[in-house]
Image 1 (cartoon, rainbow, N blue to C red):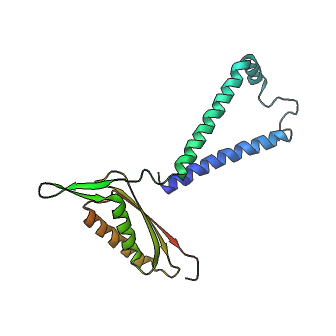
Image 2 (image 1 turned 135 degrees about the vertical axis):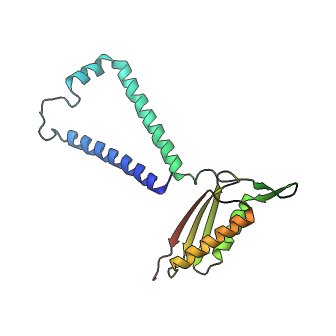
Image 3 (image 1 turned 180 degrees about the vertical axis):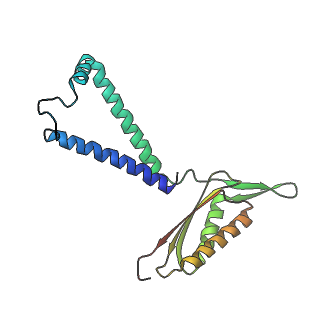
Length: 186
C-alpha cells in the first residue's frame, strides 16, 4: 500500500470515529437539534426487536465488537510492521556458463547503504530489500544534511541504485526513496 493510500485509509477511519463520537456526545447531552425529547434514540421498532431477541442480541453485539476490535488490531499491526517481508537469504541468478551466482541479500543492502553514505550530503542511509529475489523491491531512507542540494543527492541515489542493479544482476521491481533533512539552517 502506498503512503497516499495509508493516509486516505486512516483519514476515513478518523472521520468515522469522530462522527460516532460527536453523535454519542450529542445524544448524551439530551435531545439532538429538532428532535423529540420523549422519543427513544433507537426507535420503537428497533428497541422491540432488540428486546425480543434478548440473549442473542447481546451476543451479536459482543461478537460485532470483538470482530471490529480484531480488524482494528490487524490494521494497526500492518501499519507498524516493516514494509512487506524483508528479503532473507540470497539473490541467485544463472550465469552465462554452468552454475549460479549467489549474493547474500543483507550484504547487498549494507553495500548499497555504504555507497549512499559516500555523498557528503548524506549523513545516514537505511536500505531494506523485499519481494521476490529476481526483482526485489528496494526501500531506501537517507538522512540528509541541512545544506543538501536535492538535485545532486537525487542523482547520487539513482547512480547508487544503478550500480546496485549492475552488481546484483537484477533490476528492482519497485524503488521507494524517503529523504529526511536534518533540522538546521539550510
